[in-house]
Image (tube, rainbow, N blue to C red; front, side, top):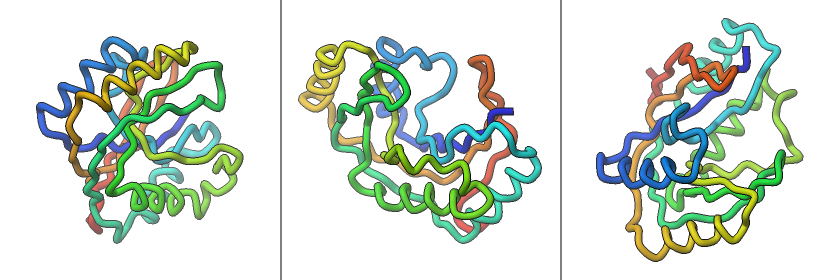
Length: 175
């Protein structure tokens, strides 16, 4: 198993369509995973039941997170020669970071990559061509209005062989 925690945000249909239109052209994961925030990255060596229990326990009492994204930014991928175009929330940013840090505070602490900074984001594009990514980011920032949404559910997923399998859904808000 290759366990992750992602949040598929609730977006308006128009915002979802705008994000997907860019992803369809510039993101090779378009057909594999919906627009999302990754909260916990690859955990390949933990029992599924233990992982689920840890996420359930540490997410108790955390409220749903409303957010607003006003721009795209460029980020260099830490593990490849690619550059990414990320939609990064203005509002909600610190709450997503705190959720990420909380989920890594217990049994997952040894999996927390402290050498790679965490930026809450939805990826819309990636490429080794920095100029191409810069053009995508500039176009987005010049033409697209803000995106508002809410993160209210965490999905525990397995990602193997370019296939996503949802294992469990954990509702935020104490439920």
